[in-house]
Image (cartoon, rainbow, N blue to C red; front, side, top):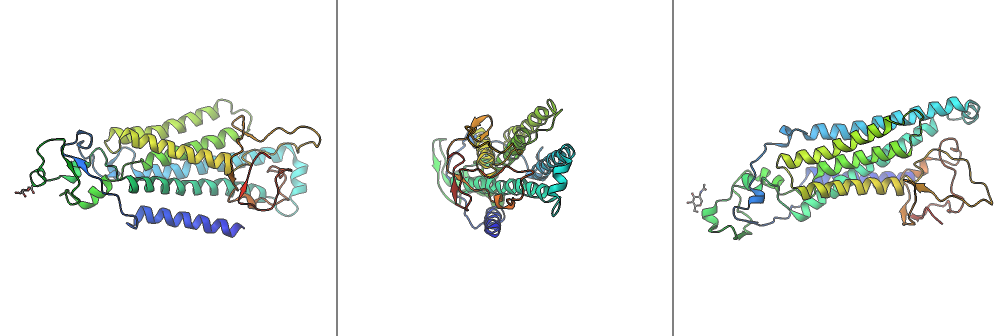
Length: 323
Ligand SMILES: *[C@@H]1O[C@H](CO)[C@@H](O)[C@H](O)[C@H]1NC(C)=O
């Protein structure tokens, strides 16, 4: 079962690669109005000269969640081990670090899966819509005399209307939704949900909200800079925020369903509290089984939730969190 998840992961990475670095999926060529004010902003220069260049965005969205998850898991593991020393030793006869390692792999694996999914969603949206960036006409440089543009109401559908650098024109046709905004909001929301739902370390009452708000405002700032530098419209950035946040919330609430520390096992005969995330009972949506769920074997009872008594334990493609 674990290999099946590796195959899905590899397919996702491959698809993201094809979208990102090849022209397997041709960009939809959309027309434009002559002298359109919305697309006539000055060209802000290559992406690397942006205030938040791709290198910075990609290193932050890889480093911050990885460091947060590693810190959170290690802290919680060692605090727990201190509190219940005997239990750890009992569980340690074969594999002392395995529960910890499993949890880290699960959280980071689902995180990177979502990262590639967000990339695919954003790229697919850009390729299918072919919406132009605000600086499109500055890079396209259409010859208005040759196209016969007399008024601004004239719509140009000519595929060879652009005389500018073809590579720049191609990237100026990919605007909706903003990939940087989607990726940074995905990363921030996943990290914030991890910190608020999983980390139960005492003495972090003010540290956790500070970290969460800082991450979220940094992610929002990426989109604001995109708009301010005429690289995206507001609609692109808002759609990117929505895509990233939706994927993060879906993954955390549905896929990483045991995103919590161990609770006492349910007492038979007592009405059970429903599984809740974010303080609300989870909707009985058809949820996908976690790609890395199988990593936690049945012997791993110290750090993960006991298997739900009412959910069949055989691997089924769809399982509901509520019976
Ligand atoms: C634009 O097109 C006209 C007519 O085809 C041509 O005379 C003119 O040189 C072109 N201008 C540029 C900058 O290519």
